[in-house]
Length: 122
Image (tube, rainbow, N blue to C red; front, side):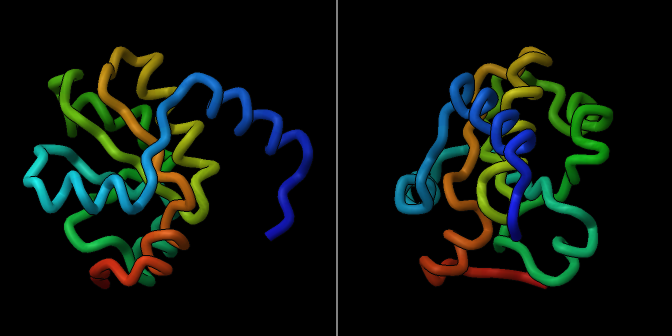
């Protein structure tokens, strides 16, 4: 998908303020049993077509509205992902602005997850 320059500019501003984690780093964390919440911020139809095993769904359209109810402890480690790492960077930026202190955006998102051959669910 081609993204507009305006969208990409927003993403880059968010990326400058958030931490990104690679699929390899996340996989290592999961293997170590690190306590974190893996959150898919894609649209409902994307989630329903397939998602990372163990992930939960809070789409970008409702994330900011529902995050506090879903994750009341703002020190909880959150790894957010989308299709390619753009929307999750913006979502992570917003989560930080809401007071969450341990938030990462998955670099490469769902595409990177699939490329790494990690478990999926439908």
